[in-house]
Length: 225
Image (cartoon, rainbow, N blue to C red; front, side, top):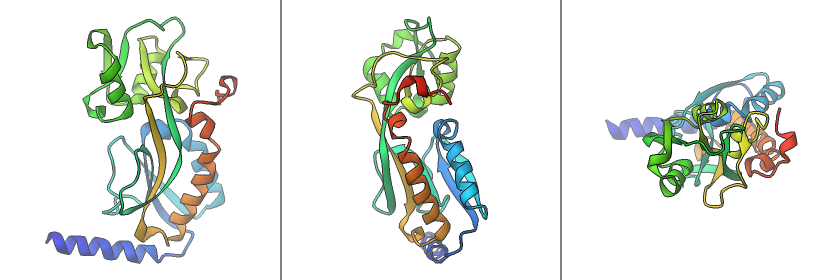
């Protein structure tokens, strides 16, 4: 049965890959941090360019299975694609420490065990004394909101922390040992699907324009949007 299921999935991908129409549903996976910061305006612009493509956004911090066609494309911070996927590296993703004004020396707000394998989770294990931790959360977005409320300091990707300079202070430069990469991903069998190819090309260009923000270099006076 497992072999039959695999064969059916392969056939489905190949048939989908022959779809040359710029229309239909496009399932895209991404993280909550990207979905709440830089992606919405680019998704809106994609909709204007391709009004017959309906984007279904799957937001979550756990990896999705492009091989089994759970989604058509993904935009995720990660180390790189597996050999079964086609990927475009958009940029590096920088991380830094943030706090609300006046809360710079308060205890730490850190990712919980579900994010232990992430860049932020690994950095916290290496550098934060457990006795200085005030709170944990399973979402960097939640940690940012706690920091904005003055609950303490936290590590965030610069694209999440730098877009609210009126509410968070960046404490120093991006951390040299906390760096990820942003990738656009699709399965090789879907590379001929018009809507997937159009999305990949459009987002590669749009997100390249965000490289300074993603890599923590943008002038801070221009980060509020």
